[in-house]
Image 1 (spheres, rainbow, N blue to C red):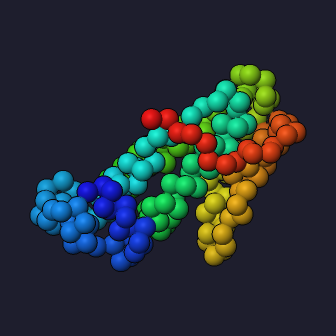
Image 2: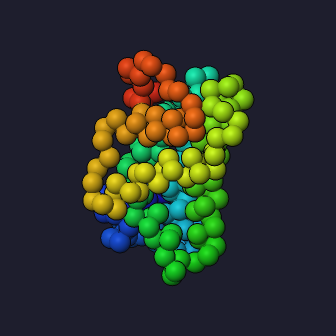
Length: 190
């Protein structure tokens, strides 16, 4: 059902998302969906969380490359599921607070935790200074994507590398000189 929900979200977007279509694609019924989820918001949050949690990028030990790969994975997940409208919905006043809390807990927090762990490891290794503002840096990374989309623009193909470079510089680090090949989707953990 989660895969069917992701396909429906990607094909039709949030506003045209249909539980009937999800049930048909999953070979089940709407009542079966309602036995597991109270409404479409809960199903969509679970589906997007499932996508975001599946096979996060491998860590390489090169903190800059790890950051680029994590940013690239974010881009992949938000595009693959058509999940961008869901982020906007979660900001609305009409969203059930429990659904919003589940979205933050299952989608936002794991991603930010992985990004923060990469930046913390970079500080521990001396790649970034100890006084780097990692709290703000962590929010800037995904916020850049949303800014492009709100302006109805596509982020450039090399956006993961560029945003990682910007964050690295802003935190007081020096990105690697040779960035060839950095920013392409790498192997993912199984």
